[in-house]
Amino acid sequence: MKEAYLEVTYRHGQPLAAYFYLPRQARQKSVRTRRVEPGLIIDLSATGQPLGIEITAPALVTLTILNRVLRDLGCAPVRRADLAPLRAA
Image 1 (cartoon, helix red, strand yellow):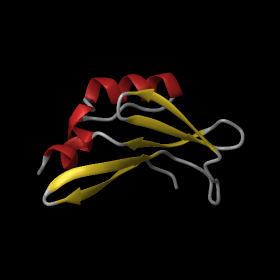
Image 2 (tube, one colour):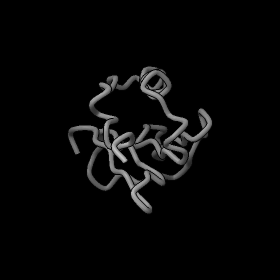
Image 3 (spheres, rainbow, N blue to C red):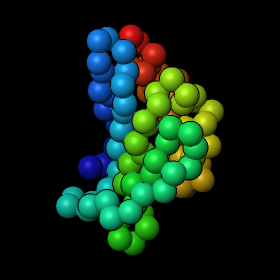
Image 4 (cartoon, helix red, strand yellow):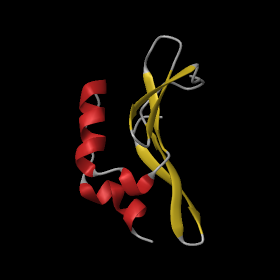
């Protein structure tokens, strides 16, 4: 996967959880996690590469918080439009 993207799970029209996929090599698997903020859990490969960010509390996640985590991981920031699906319902 070459580009990051957001996948959102809804229940009764409200975002229940989401996953922000980060660029990775094919077949890389998550072997451990690290909780970084309320509502955010980073999935890491065996080599420590971040593979994605679980968003377990969409209402708590802001653009500022997510971009701070992405910056700390060495990843490109997201734009407000990238998080629009979390706010759409």
